[in-house]
Image (tube, rainbow, N blue to C red; front, side, top):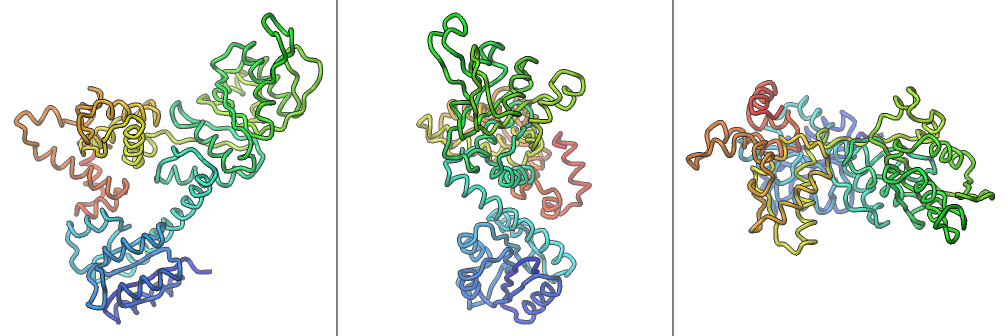
Length: 453
């Protein structure tokens, strides 16, 4: 089985044929063509994982390597592109990667480097393709638009959702407050066979025991003072669909026992009732507690924990996927610009620097609130550092305190340039170090000195 398809574009016949031969021997299905016209014709009929193109193509080409890359990505959005160049200047490499290239290779080529980079690029392309397929399916089913991110942690979560969603199994979502547990629950529902039925959510920590019992299981007329008529609970209302139990760790022990009975028997007893009511509902539960520890120490019903813990998804904290912060910030900026009727379309570089060094204890929810505030306060089309809360303005490093003369210091310029290169490489420190022409250890020292490591 082929390790992946690679299209090589180079106007030097010997170079492209040798490269295609080396990749074929490495297990790839490699084809070599001489110009952009032939490359686009091939891409129009065959999907590839990787396009290896020379930056400067000959007279037979209508575009240079970057132009070819941009047209090729329109045909295959998941395609990764590596640009080869004999003119390996830092500006040229940064430009190619800023326009969407996965990486670059300097000529004369080192075949070990080519093989290693090809493996990474093909793997990245396959991952992008799987994530795009999932997002397309979720969009087709009116999935929530908030599952934003391209980090490995987010891509892994999306693929797990794709595996879990078609089953009928109970799912337990674990994660810090603000990581988007309800959004993930909605995504699972929308990608499941139950998508045509209702998705209902309840925060188990927001009700007293009596009110929560009535909310979940319903009640009979006269069950308690004020119960003037029979009321169906959320389990019955979500029949055939999905019920999301947020903060399930806040349930009292008696409520845990009642929930366990429903999950075991697929029947419930309304408050004040004497007749079992069958229910067909998928349960997705969520908590920011460590339920395994709670169950071991008696703080949570052990059998209920086993019932809920059929499939467990751990949602990463925002600090664990910092490469998604710029993407999320732009997403929320555009969202609130539209909702609030504003024309805010840009985010200043020092804002990204401040957001990138902030710990975000409130996770994605806190970032969303910050961007909503910034859109409201922006007095132009750009969110600037002064539109962030004071503590975040300071977290951007020494931006405010070192610009007393209005001129940035050399250290500040270096810090901003490193942050910019890291953003262009999606947080990939090895690739950033290559572009900056320093080794990875030196980059780490600079990041630590700037308070970013």
